[in-house]
Length: 365
Image 1 (cartoon, helix red, strand yellow):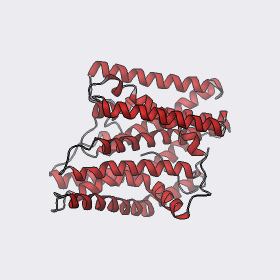
Image 2 (cartoon, helix red, strand yellow):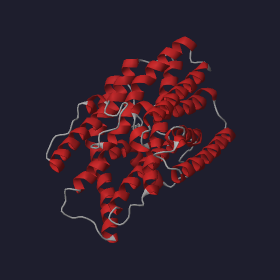
Image 3 (tube, helix red, strand yellow):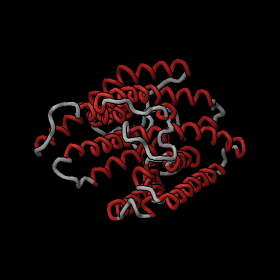
Image 4 (tube, helix red, strand yellow):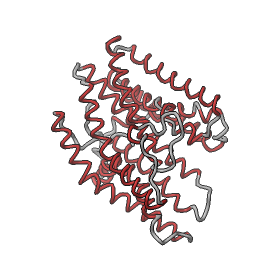
């Protein structure tokens, strides 16, 4: 699988960022209620969608290039880092400025420069959205080195599946041991710890393997998607009915169940074509998918900027207007950053690495 746009995957990407945006827009209703768990679940699900989709896309690229004997580690890292790092450092700098304006001091940002701010410890409270980028960059370092080693040992035959399952089991065991030893909180102590979340991407890599190498017919794709729906229903019951900060399953194997269930729907999504979709829907999905990385990074910066305004919501109408303004401003900001900053860098990247880009597939946020 190369870096080409697929409508079904664009739908997933657009859905993922819209879920994150909806979850964060709910913050504007805090003056009215603290019962926003369902909305928080949207943001959680959106990030998990990004993780498995990133594993699917990057895993497909790695497996495809290895099978074609065209893989170059240096080229892979250059392309990934020119895709993710410029936007990241742009918004890191912006959030440092916002922190200075909001709190009058300077944040400690040294670990943010090397994506170790939440490697095996809780993420700092400022620039909180960067936690997922830390997980993703760690995956970008480890995944190609692992596939390179395994590919040379097994020639990327069926044995790669055993290695992927072993990697999932290893990360899961580390997560179980971490929970038993430290008794951490569900969100800050497990969900946002980079070392404990790498297996989320591997489910996407497994889906890419079966799509690109083994092949899955339409019936099998449908059955997998149905199984994924069943898994998500079970995960929702655990998420809403359990005491997440104290439940063993919620802090350990829930983080297996959710990405596995989402990855089960990827083969069906990858085959979804846009032929019968209205042009306006295709255009909206395509634009939101294209802006998704910039939108993920800018939306909470927009919210922090809005907190500098003298106006504060207190009535239902004001909360609705605040949330709507937040969404609109985030979309405008993302479109601006993509057009004037992100897209020129991607064009330059494609020139220096000799790749043609079909619409600019965005990685996970």
